[in-house]
Length: 526
View (cartoon, one colour):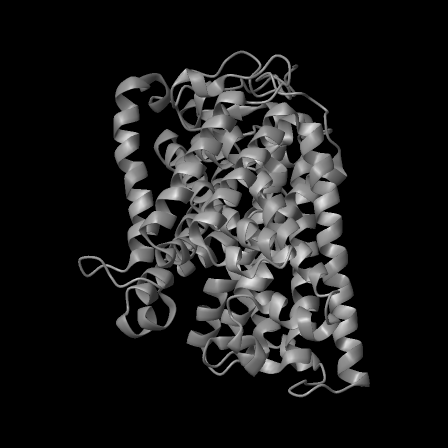
């Protein structure tokens, strides 16, 4: 690939293989999927149906939020949109499937880069247990087998099968991944749309008991009784947006790899906020706050019976099932590609960088991800269902950590270019920085709240262990474990940890060729 500037010399990673940063350079299938597939994967990975079913009731239940739940979802969207711009511009400079790992390494150094990669992998493995659990339960509910749905060993077996099937699909090719996601997401979004329309129509036509006419005032965050109530709601709201970055993790397999996936990230967040606000409006309008709070664990299934009646209520079960299944698959994708990138950069053992010549997918990383997820899922179920619930809460720490660092990395990497125009300053500087600051605040606030006795009693499922709340043990403890593993990795991968910091050419944001090629070591004095 030719340099876009004769004044700057690209700073090639010390341990990165020749051409590894180019689309297909790692052996992945270049130009395998299009822009639409990037958006589909980004939206599907958040599991909109599952996320709403499992989270909306808890947001409504936060004291002081109530009918302002749509406003909470809007506020939660803001840091996600800001970070999405960070993803867009960092992907433009370096369309590496390691995403945050690669970008933080370049801009902020190998140690923070390694920890960012670990946060992605750990968060994805932890959430797989919840997704597999939902997939198992809803498989039985679809056929009306209520007893099996409440039997731990039966749900575990079906959940393991779901993980195995989705792992196999991820191994045999990205095109099949994209097609599967398209069908699953289409069924999910169509069902949610029908639910919203029917629910609103019934509110105006039938006025069911407990229903409330929709009010645009529900979108006003200033209608929330206190700032603390807003933040507590946002702590929950951020989780349901997590996952849109999966569409960027397949950048090396995408058409227009430097621009398409990054733009898709921004569009994905916009589509998600539209889905969440519309469905939350319909749900609380039909059921009122009392109904949503009474069915916090599964809002959509409870309302589906009332909105559609039997047997049409099965379509919402299908929506949540397809949502969990799709997200199971799209959670494996970024994890496998993160570890592939880390291996190719020389940050972890080389075997994780193995790519199948036949399928052009990261086979070892994908299979290890699937197996590890199964082990974690079985282990958590054997310990306690309450631990499973707290593990989902704990993921918020890891989300805020690696999303936030991506935003900060964008500002640091482009620091010599963001003042070139008002547009660059806003989109590549101010917004990613704002996203970082908001998520840093959420991280600290989550640590304080989840460790506070009164809050913990309301929101945590498991009693504290040695005086420490379980979400903190899993979330913060998981990040600290990454630090320990990194110390071990330093011993065997010294070349990677000796990498120098890089900075974008001052003209990078105004010239796509320069952005995609030229990075300068700060000490070069350019």
